[in-house]
Length: 335
Image (cartoon, rainbow, N blue to C red; front, side, top):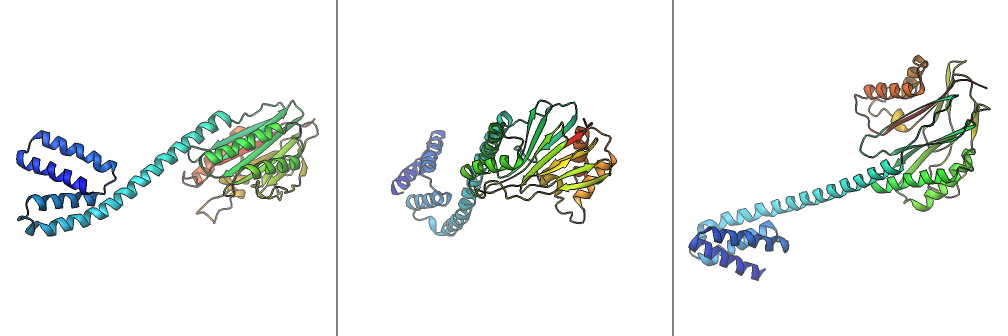
């Protein structure tokens, strides 16, 4: 610090003597040294004060309180400035991480909706931010079986994107066993438990439809229950299935259930971004969803998904608070 004070004193003295552009240029270059050595603003004022006092010892009496006041102001300014710079740096790091995570999702986590003659499939998935915390995976084996996994990852940034990648590739490696929802969840659970930290939670609803037998088997790992619309009875049945979130305990067991699908029946699978109307506790989201589907059941599965999104977004004043994902299977006919 003494060396800097001596340098500054010389620069200031030369400027007071000559007051040229060259002197100002030298002073401006000197600020780089101050920045490189992380000299705080209040210390710069103190260096200037000491230099003035040394150059003009008889003129400091009246200006001394003013300098002391400026130093106090600059102490608080420096603290606020450093905090601001720290926040900017964290924001830049977060934006970079989100960009990487979004790129991972766009390149590795695309959901391809299969086209079947007997089953009408619809899907919408809208993130509230750049990266979607929801993921949907389909597996289609000719016209015999169709499986669907609806996943919600509670986490952010690259770790969440990598977690979803683990889920995707885990599901893809289970093509030999996709007909067994319990087994699928148990394997994915062990994969996630080994590779994900404790701060991240993953829920999944997994269903497999035997298209020829019209049997839909399903299991859940802490996920939002699906809905079964029974067309003949004109009623909705929640597909409840108890199961621990994925990645909590490695040896967790999951049970599956079965239902029979008849012609024009619907299966509605969703994440909690569809059913949680935050700030509107007086509304029953499932009753609203059921009423919308019942009134518009003649629409295609994709049209129903889009209708749900538009109407629920409208109910929440176009301020959805979570990622919105819904998948609908509509049984066109039975064999």
